[in-house]
Each structure stands twice: as C-alpha cells, then as structure tokens.
Image (cartoon, rainbow over the protein chains, first blue to last red):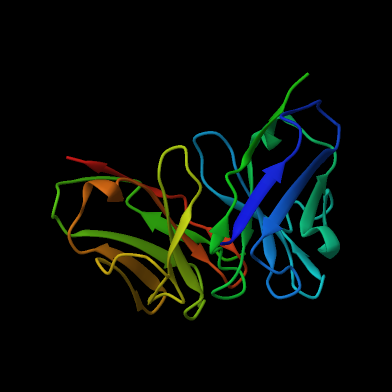
Length: 118
Length: 105
C-alpha cells in the first residue's frame, strides 16, 4: 500500500525558510518521481517541483529561485526547502507520487498547512 | 507558458444527470492531460490520465475525451459521492486549470 506523509512546521515567519519532509512507503524513490504541489486556502492547485527517480529535479519557473527539492533514498524521504517566504506562500503543501506517467499524480499525502505570519 | 482555461467555474446538477467539464489548452499538449477530483478537506484523486485513460479504481461513469486542444471530463450519471471540485492538469509543462466546483441541485 502506497503512503506519503508530509511533515513540517505549521507556522513560518516572513522572510524565513520553509523546510518540509515527505516520507514515502510502498513506493520506491528510485523507481518513481515525487512532486510537491501547494494549494492556498480556498484556491486551486500549483505544481512546485519534481524529483525524478534518478535524482534530477524540475521546478516551477515562478518558484525556481527560491526552491530546492532533494531526497534521502535510504530513509524514503523527499525534502522541500523554500526561502524568503511571504504571506502569499500560506498554503496546504502536498507531496504526490507519480506512477501512471511523468507529471501525473497518482498518490497523494494528506498535506500540511503552512501559515506565513509574524 | 501553456494556459489551461477550465469551464464552468461552478456547476449545479441533479443526481443521475450527465455532467461535462471542459479545459481548453492554449497550445498543443497532445494527450498530456489529467483530471483530478478533490472532495472538501481531502487531497486530490487522479481520475483520468493521458486524456482518456481511467486511473485504477475510478468508476467507469467517469470518462475523458479530446478534440484538438479541448479536453472534456464526463460523468455519465452523477452520484452523491461525485460532489467536489475538479481540476484539469496539463502534464506537458505542468499547470492546472482553475477548477470546477460541482454541487448537487
């Protein structure tokens, strides 16, 4: 059974760095990609970036300068770091696994709500 | 950037009714198109990928189609568990439509 679970702080100060972890089970990071997607409260979905099975990454061009995605295959964990956070970065952050094809999100975590506020 | 124009933004339909949601791509994306359902307070669920392929475990009343750069999601007989929001996603360079909120009439 495939499971993904996000973890990280619920509150981040403006201008600080967000660090999130996605822990995966039943799903090999060396076989499939993992993506980060976010959703501001009451709004739509925004793809943030992908780490592929070979460890390479792709980023949303709008976030690329602030975003880094990495992984630890031994722990089945994928990491998101985004710096210079602003209030508009307040959102639910979700990790999602790709299985049916690149950039298709078959498996989703429950998400973690991150609020950017002083 | 490829834009996805999704319509309608909201939709009210009766049980057993046929429901259609469309997305118009701003340029050719081939069959690189997916549809997701999101119920309130839950994570999205993949319904359709490659424009017409049904994801595992998705009821057969859901179907996807393509005509040029216009893509459609059809629910053949609306059920109460289908209520929620629906998003298209172009997987060519990865953007989502703005979403359609489906409610029961």
